[in-house]
Image (cartoon, rainbow, N blue to C red; front, side, top):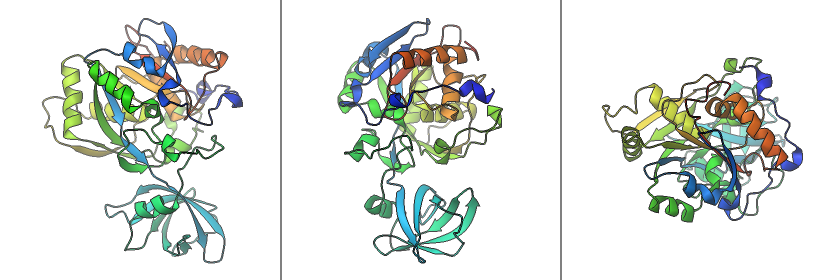
Length: 355
């Protein structure tokens, strides 16, 4: 796939700066399996799903990962915490700005007087830092940090919880799995009563969310590894749905990456042990990928030149998604993290790379 195929002109005034209220009142474009497009509201989702379908959700919770610190010489540093480097949680990978003058062994002082030690440079502004032995890094973030909103959102929300899903429970992400932001507890209950099951997996969203693709051939892009976890009950629900020929509805590209990783390594085979699975994935999904687990994709409208747009094109088909995006712009849909949503079914007979 060539990079220019991921180009779109998105007018600045269509980039959503705040979520809709209530969450499920945003618009929803449905791309049906028979090729039809419908323009609905997210709360109409129960009319589009079927008894026996399973919603797979990402329950990762966004860390208050943007923390200000000072060099002992006085310079201000902004540290974006990306992921723990080991199980104790004392050492983390951060993205530091500015980082040009930083040196290994240097200490950074936080607002409460505690200090972080720079242990090793990883390149491109990334560092391994170690925190004080008596405190967890997550505790430091929760008390002193701010949510790491994407750069195209220019105002911090009045309620930071608006950048968390209602089912977020496992802290670890540097950005929200945004397709899940549209759900309310009430809508999830309506879906449950309609016979739609749900299962939660965890993928902690990391650095690559912030990096555009620069390579002319998209497949040459290096995507960073992200950690995932799938519990035994979720695995059983997903496997049972596949066996019973229900549909797997992936809520977001993060969930899609987990499910396609599991399918690729045989973990969704009902004959394998039903034990919890921890792992890392660097799967890069582009047009031509054969989807083995996901039947329906629920997702937002994405940034040009991004890996998530490439994945969505792979699922929907390049031409089909380009037409849908052009219509979304014409109808003034709201784009990106706080924007509107799409429900995409596989085309009858398969989407194909250019379908």
